[in-house]
Image (cartoon, rainbow, N blue to C red):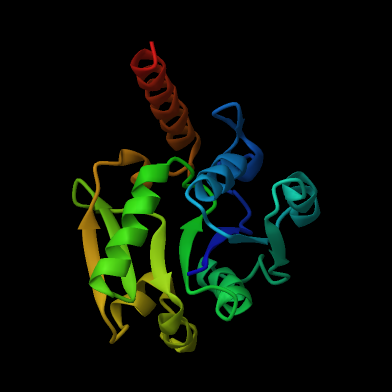
Length: 208
């Protein structure tokens, strides 16, 4: 069974006041950390949807094996439009795919593996992770659900498309705060770095 992933990184980063995907994190960058985590869990193909500074990001990602897809209307379209570009590219290439915004990089390898196993055992079409009652990322979507999501035209984005999806959905609680941490604003980025630092310290102590 082949697993893919769509990462959306086309936005203007207007609230961050800096280009979020390439901000430093975990000895890499925000986008580099997300791609590496997905690959560590055995994700076969990763599509990163780019727009703002797309050529710079494509050059950066060229060594990772990820495929860059361009949303040429990134200045006037929303995240769902970028998501649909990725969905359209991967829907016939993969049996299921993860979806995540590009500024949510600290989900764990184990969480991804658990999500895949849970989808296999429950046969749900969309699996939604939650931490402490808060929805997180990445979402896991069976390829059979992609056409319905792409056909949604309610104008309220991917969340509303999922809410209106008539197939099987499952919400699973995870002990993984990284799934709910983004880099939307400078203060969020500081929280990301602090969380990553604590996690690394815990890992180092466990390996002593």
